[in-house]
Length: 625
Image (cartoon, rainbow, N blue to C red; front, side, top):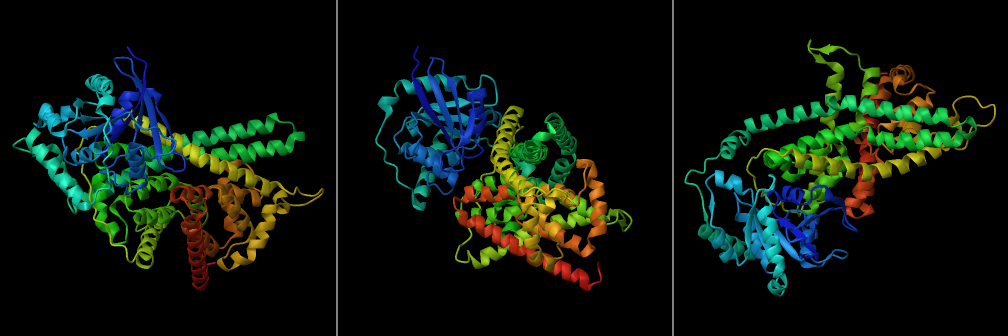
């Protein structure tokens, strides 16, 4: 028995079950963080082999080649080649392949062989391959590749026993297997030659069934139909958005009540003489953290749908269906998934742009993701619509308030596609669109264990990345709204004497042409931390107390204080305005530059001002006051 500590790197193409294998090997030992200096996710864990070897396993991002065409692929390439600072060179490369479709993975295997590092090929999902009549001669495949080959069923208990045994065998002679690194970045002709060699090996070692008409092909005949496929996709999205905004409500209310109760408890426990600390904890820390966590149920639900659809194999089909539609706006088909995620929150949507290979396509998607109507806009939309739009029905069955809400969503989608088309025309005119090549995985039953682990890791990452930024911003906003304090005998709310009010009065001349008063300007300041904070800020500047129960009273006051033209102008403002500091911070991290964060802020602010200006003046011209 040995206690030698080894490092193992999991490499493979997307949709090969690599993450399921990682989950099966490491279980509860997983750690998720970011690689130093970049925002690519780093997943590591550990396990022990039958002979007692302690193994640290690193789950590298999926890739079809080591060329490094995206941030994820660059990380995989640099770690396998031993180029990444702060990351040790792996002792063994574990290349994971889908046993039902070896074609693209074998090409990657041939490329990895040139590195000269000890390697083991794992044919995952071998049970599905056998059930479909696919016969693989493991000995012949191992001879052709000059590599050890084993099989696995990552989703079943005991499905990695052979893999663990072979890992011990390979590591026992790892030093003998070490060879010189002969890898160079492959050209297109090199890739084509490697693919021909992979096809030859498959023909020699793999026997395919005579009748390949599988359940996957029969389902694809429907879901990839140019008409029915889009209808099915629309129905899936409809159900998902209904779930995001309906299923999450009880949990959101529970979280909201919990933070309100905690804030009130702090208010009651701390003595009045500690008023400044009391205000800081209640209004700065607790409200700041709560404004993020209250939306966690929506984030979990939308990621639940996305992970289920990915695990089932449908998400790749959705991107394929949307490619032609999005291509008309200068977007890549893979942009569909990040933009879909942005309906819950732009932060995970922007982070998920890593699936886009081309840097310009990825950048364009990042720039327009904040225009999608995220859940943080809903409190503002609901407040203004309830106050100014009557709850009547159009054509006898369509709720007018719901119709206005739908219009706001449609306006966000339309504006995002328009901005993308403009950017494509003026900025990337010389950029030829890359062909949309996508491997369509076979359908399979989602595994709840993998889904649960994925949701937990994403929820934790969201809370860490968004929560820290929101908290720091809320502390700043609390300071601006609390100092200087009101003088003795002052009349009106204390906020009228604060830095926030000073800023609001200074901004009022700039905002008056779009119908905003100084109170709205003040509300926009805390709204920079998180859009939904503006609702509470409006209650503060109009001296309305009572927390969540005061929402109806706030609406009544706004209906008396504002004109309908002002309300419409503010709705349009929230479609476009960059009212989310954490989103801007994520853009900076994902692009690696403050330049594109500034570009996003400026273009969205300009869009918001021009659109609100047109809306306000058109409404007044039509006699809407």
